[in-house]
Length: 291
View (cartoon, rainbow, N blue to C red):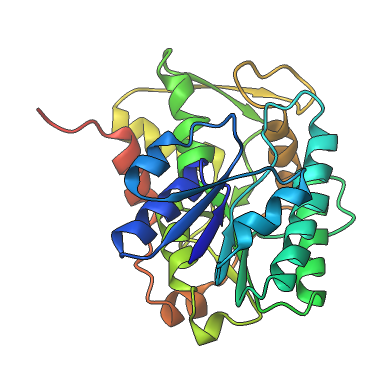
C-alpha cells in the first residue's frame, strides 16, 4: 500500500493516477474539505486527515508500506509563514515520526533544489529543516530535490498573463539564469524511486539540461506564438495581481543566488528518465494544436 500525501495537488494527483495505472494500491491522504472525489472515483482509498492534526496520521498509515509526500502549505493562506511552519515544518516532521512508528519501509519527501534550514525564505527553511529531520529520524528516506517546474513558473506565471494580451510582468530584470524541469519528469522520478535500491537514503536532484533567464525564455515564447511580448518588471514587494504572495518571494530568493547550474545526469541515468528539454516543453505549452 502506498500513501500519497498532498494527493489533490498538481503533482500528487498525478502520482496517484500513475500508481493506480500500474495496478498498485493507493491511499490518498486528503483534507475533508478538499476536492478528493476524483481520486476516489479513480480507485484510490481515501484517508481523511490534515498535516496540522497528528492524530489523523495513524489510521492513514495503517497497512502502508511506502509514503510519498508532495504536500506544501496552501499558497493563498492569509498567514503564509505560520502555515508554512505548520505544514512544511512541524506537520511533515510529525508525519515522519508517525511513519517510522508505523513501520513504513520508505519515506519519499518532495523538497526543492537549494532549500536549507535558516534561509530567509520561510519555505526553504521549513523544507530544509524537514529534510534534516528525515535524515536523522532513522527512517529509510528518499528526498526529491527538483528545480522549478516549467509548467508552473513558465506555463502558469507567463502563460496565464498572455491570455490577456502580449504583456507579462516578472520579478526583477529577468537576467539571472535558472534551471527548470517538467513536472512530468518529477512524476517519473517520484514513482521510479519506490522500492529502488539506489533511492535508499538518497537525496536526488533533478533538472532538464541548460539554464535560462526569463528574458531568454520570453524570447523563445515570442517565436512560438509569433508575437512581440512587452515585459514589465517589479520588485518582490510590489503588487502582483493574481499570483500567490509566496511566488514573488521565491522568485527573488532564487535570483539572489545568482546563475545556477545543476548536474542530475546520474539520477537521470540510474532511474531511466526520459527528460523533456525546456524548449520542447515550452512548445507543448505555447503552441496551439493545428485543427
